[in-house]
Image 1 (cartoon, one colour):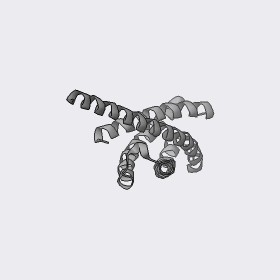
Image 2 (image 1 turned 30 degrees about the vertical axis):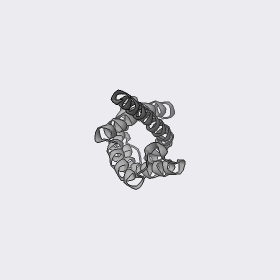
Image 3 (image 1 turned 135 degrees about the vertical axis):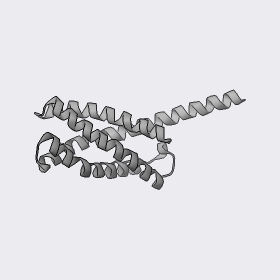
Image 4 (image 1 turned 90 degrees about the vertical axis):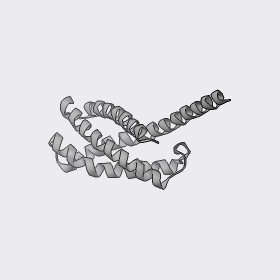
Length: 146
């Protein structure tokens, strides 16, 4: 994946994650839209940076085609990524929402459960859609060269 595509992948992922998280948190908490929006935008910004760095590292260890990754590899990916992200975001969530670290931990865990399921679906779909697009481009290129 090129740097530009990595940026596109991360931005699209975070945009959809922020919208879904804000909606879910509004339904299940008493926090106001503005506080939740600010919190989720801060967390998404942290997550985008972490996503970019983590994907580069993960791809160095798992070099096969992304759409070929096994369920075990995808579960490992999600577990390592989300664990690292929790360490970065719990203090931010506590600070912005003016809640204890303990409360932020549980709120962040709730978001993480949602994001974990979403991340699996998003990355699976993205990898397969990307492979399909790349195949079509390659087919079109070889057809024009013939």
